[in-house]
Image 1 (cartoon, rainbow over the protein chains, first blue to last red):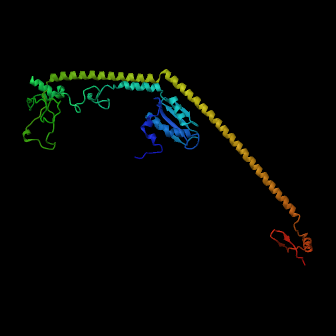
Image 2 (cartoon, rainbow over the protein chains, first blue to last red; image 1 turned 30 degrees about the vertical axis):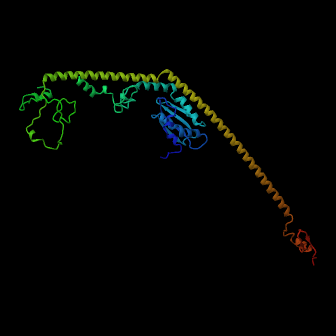
Image 3 (cartoon, rainbow over the protein chains, first blue to last red; image 1 turned 60 degrees about the horizontal axis):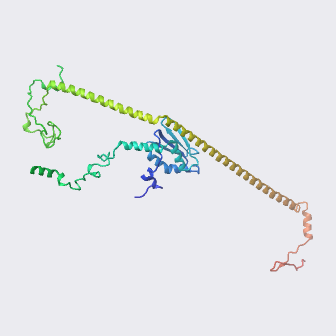
Length: 171
Length: 220
């Protein structure tokens, strides 16, 4: 199966999940104005090429728009839900610096992310079992320390209904 | 009279209410009914809807089950009240949950520290932009200086070139002037011709391998 594009690693799940910019819930739209030529726009170009897929993966509900060759200098603009617009000048910055900057001003902090993770964990109990959609295990027989599934390991005679009925009939 | 629709079939009429022998459990077709139905449910079984009914069913009159009017009234009233209470409870709980969610959301978003933090970050961002602007202006200024310097250099070079050119031309003009003194004009034509005739020149010479000229022949 051929790989698509110049840097197919950008399409892998591992790469995408390594993105660490998770926007706050108030950020709705992100707009990037950059130029396809010029030294000063190099960082912005790399940012668009390498980091925006990661950001979009982590923020599927944020609209990201790219504008090319419309302004002499590159910049980012964020539109928040209270109408505020945040302008970030990215001329002559490397893509790493840009991501750091963005993470600092509009990203969720590590503590917040961990807190959310913990909240999510609280909703579901890993000890329960049921449909695969909601639980880890489907049947009691899959849990360690419980009686194994009779489909794989036959039950001992004393637990089987036919033995017990036979015993009762005998007695 | 004001009667419930369900009681209409209970009035005396040409059709007597046959005592439907209760065939509890699965109805006419035992194989197909769902296990939980208490009464006969119409199920097709072997025939499709386009097949005619059997001859034995020719005079069959299907009647709904008999209904006791008072019991019906009581039961309906009870059900009405039960459903009323249940839906009220559900609405109550739903509203409560929504309220809680809304409060939580507002608390999470609009808390004072968060706004403060946001403002601080925006201020930092503005500073960063200002710094960037300073850097950009610096760069632009340097570029301008560079440009000016280059322009000056070019202008100098041009000037030098022009000077050199002018000098060349001057030299040529002077040389021409010098030569002009020896030109043959209509005035000194006669004189020059006479001069040439007076001084014969001898072009008879030989040249050896080393380039030395040997003149021996005498002009006659």
